[in-house]
Image (tube, rainbow, N blue to C red; front, side, top):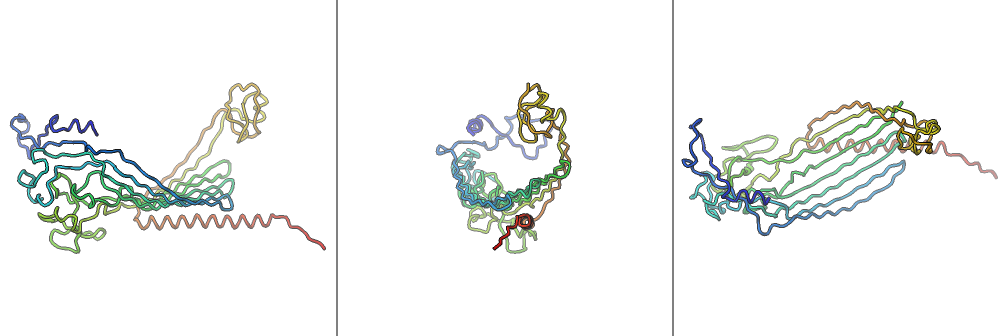
Length: 386
């Protein structure tokens, strides 16, 4: 930030722009060209570091059959976020966007000859609310399932305002405002050590802007059009998005805040459904860690899978683990992966997340009923005699 401000101070660099050149390949001397407006970057004397506050409240519950469910509400707030503000923008009501930018078109706070002045400020804000529900269950020693769903609302101010004299017109949906996000992962251990690991992800698309492609404020930036009630002259209508007025007139900037301007990040990209399936098996090689290897003085330590983390080196008679474990020389993992990604509508993402969540809950309920029935059947009966 400070490096850019020192470099673009209005004196170290001068920019020349030639429109519709016809002199190639004979490049003219700089003395024959008119320099364009300087781009100066300065730092606000009141610049301060941003800070963030996060508060959360949640509840977690242990359910039967190794299942844990939880719900958490999180509120994130950030203040004094960095912004780049064009402070030499013509005063409101003095610039005519239908005329080219000139010394007579607009009243510039620092004068037209000062050029474009971008000031680093710390007036940005960010607000985010997240409601997240998670579940983690292990149906059996071979089957486990984990999933989470989050509902997100996020609003902020952009890094550079559309109207430098009214930041409020830009407060709206943040780029992080992805409404729905659902993930489901699992692990299934099949016969002969084959493992299946599915991963399903459903998430909403990111918001994006509708831009007019015109400079309405004299700050060399794009602005958003106005919403229109129906078709007409200079009206662009799209059935999926609505109607937009592209002919805003000379007083567009002056009426921008009070007119029906398109909100920031008005549209949303399609959501994405991603399905990944991983099928793999681990093959061990080298001497087996276990009672036989311990007798030969090969391994050190015991532990899970019949042996400890020791390698196949000279252990010198350390205590061995149980028999039938992993091999000490190493492991090779054979993996087969398949993936599919597809765009979907916003409503489809929410519906699919609900369907998958309900299916997961139903599967857990079925497993719980089956487990309870099996436990009741295996419970010993006590005879009572009189």
